[in-house]
Image (cartoon, rainbow, N blue to C red; front, side, top):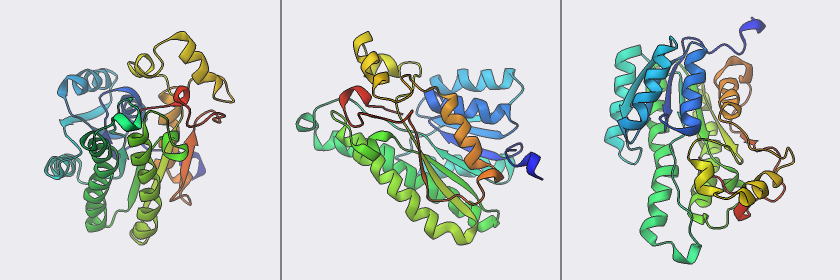
Length: 265
């Protein structure tokens, strides 16, 4: 039925990094549309307010603390989700981190930490969820959140750009390998998105904010909802013949890779 092509009601969904920013917007929008959502973050301080807001609005949500770098914590989240709702239909790998620094000033440990969170964490969570989808023979959708930094590179965030580039390549590799199991794997690469806390860190002055929006053809910041909506599309039957793609949601970047266009998701 074409009128239900975009329907995600009842879909059991895990959103990593769901306690702040883009992840919180994705979780709230999925719940608003009737999905059953497990949100994770490294601190319950972030998760609590988001879960409370969703529940007050009538949504179905659970929250668990999870550091995506640790496979035992990842497995615990997946197992708990299956225990509550019986399966996993959608995974949105949104958890990420970075810091601004010149490449020659980044320590090997600092570089490895950002790769571990953004790239390794995406793989570990994808593997855990895919195993459930395979065992239950349900198929499903995995949506990875990368960044324009992973497409074009990013001055002062080379560690983040390299990790996000790996996410894009990993997306296509997993899409090819897991297609026979009915698992679609896609990626979204946001451009400059205005979310609480991020704008002040990356573009702390009006001048830098102006330069950031002028780096896009649409001449504005995107919103968290404008990332959530493509996630809805990729999680629904409307995108049934789409897998392995990287969708750039960036207002058409004109000066990609420059410091003013940098983004952390």
